[in-house]
Image 1 (cartoon, rainbow, N blue to C red):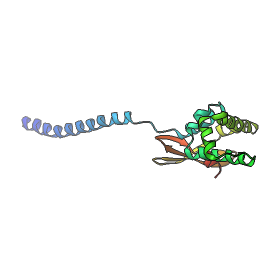
Image 2 (image 1 turned 90 degrees about the vertical axis):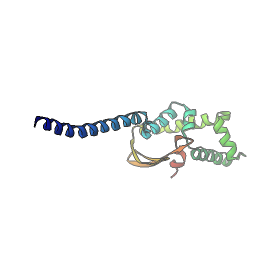
Image 3 (image 1 turned 180 degrees about the vertical axis):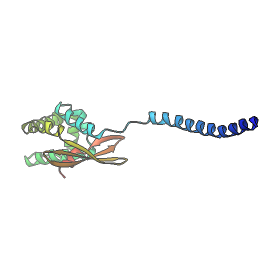
Image 4 (image 1 turned 30 degrees about the horizontal axis):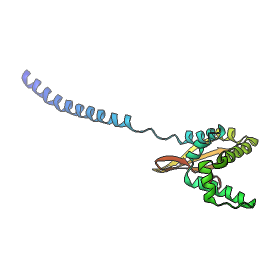
Amino acid sequence: MLGNQKETKRKTLLPCTLVLTAVLFAFAALCPITAAAAPETDFIELYKGFFKDLGAKKYEKVWDLMTMASKKRLAKLITDMAVAQGKSVTETQVFDMLDNNTSNLRTEYFDNLNAEWDKISFLPQVLGGQYRLQSTAKELAILTITVSDEPKDFQIIKEEGRWKLNFFVDLEK
């Protein structure tokens, strides 16, 4: 009788042990994958970093963080201002000047932008504003920034394998 009890106990423990072992191996197999996965992008810090870099005059970093559409929009804005002043220049020429910082065009533009924003304390307001991530997808995130009770949506787009800000395009929407 005692032998039968031991046999029954062994038959019961064996499947439980096998299931427990399988669960432990499955869990252990998942751990390295989780640890190796890249952390999610902090879109709020990405945008705040853009404004901080702008204020710190790190204009090359600012330029590199902008989408191609945003860079082209900025080139168009500057071209339109130049043409209105009677200068003969194309968007392509202005874009190339911005991209290479020829004649310090990029530096001068962002310096002037900072000077205008300083007059209205824009950077402290935007850095202290409310940020809320609205949505994320594989190559697009929408971030709402609220300053003085006025919300504005901004797109963060994946280009060339990096998240970039569509700032100058979104600013006009």
